[in-house]
Image (cartoon, each protein chain N blue to C red):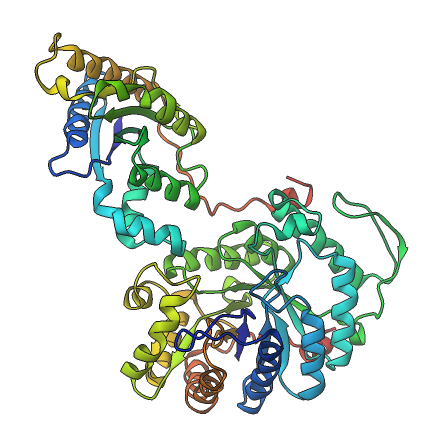
Length: 205
Length: 356
């Protein structure tokens, strides 16, 4: 089956280590999906490109066409890979803003969606950001967060005592995400404008 | 087709002077604006309802009752009446009274309100917003249509042998529109009853507004009220008009930039591209408004927002002059020329009375 995976990367630098990590996760997840017999359609969303539109949406209430496209990519995906830099002990404000806007426009946009959470940071001491901030956020958004999360510290890009540690973790997380996506049927088309028959509303539905 | 203006009733400082009108000034000017709208040949004047500063419109029937006494032709309406936090019994009574005093020149638009604390201030929970709108309106309809009502529901004390007085004028309840920006349940509600559906058509891109209106039209047909293109649709829109386009932009920009709803978001130009906000010459406003029909189908009511955001009273009155003298006459002609014969007008007291 054809599976769309949205890869949301919120790094600010160009190139950013968050995007570097996102690309490796995307590649690994795509390979795992193909191993399972699926077609993998990986779609990258660079949050930085929508920075102004996100703030505009927060104050004006509606998305620009470009932001709408990015939000639709995420809402329409079979699974997500989300990567944030660690800023002041949490996900970045811009990363959060993206998911705030998505949730404002459609509370059920991410319900039951498989998600792989990942983060980068200036030191390995930040790695619990994944368990203290990212996992609760996506649980709140009613996602199914796969057990393995991936944090990349500076030493993971070179000089770590166990050089393949990050690669192994990427492989394990990607396999979990692919399995979670693969074992599901085709994603049902959701229409937020689907009416509830009025009799149900009258009956207190 | 009906053309009119609708106000939110906000008090804001004029960015040029920093001075805001007093409540008394604002209220007096709202009355003058309504009188001016009738004088300019507009069809509808509608006021909002809010229960918190910086708004002055907590008592719409008092305001509209006074305007009714000083006008003779203009139709009075609301934008919106809070069906969630008001007691539906009091709405039935107040608006029936107003309908009598206005000689039938009245309809209403139901809305839920978007100010969070208003719900708890009135003893309600915002999470019940849709349920309140559904239950309260169902009761309101019965109070206007049945002389004696026995009723029990979730949100208000039960009624036994209750008669809402005065009874609607000529036994014809006021026509009701349901306003909602983004709740499909409200479009569904309007469709279920065959009532009107109004989209404020401010802030949101047309793709969104079209989905709401299409939903209402489809369900209107589903519930057997007639073909989808005969559903009763109203649209808002915000305009600022000057003889020359560039003068309109230059004069409007500081109000836009300081506006609590528009300010610090997308620029004026960007907002005009993405939303129905129309700032320019009379011809530009005409062209923009004609496009609403292309986007949303033939519709029955067009209301413009021309005041608020601290706009000086003189500029507001000049907007009504532009609308009455140059914009609306052309729109009436153009819309009439392209409108198929089977498209109905919005119901009025007279038409509902005749159809009884």
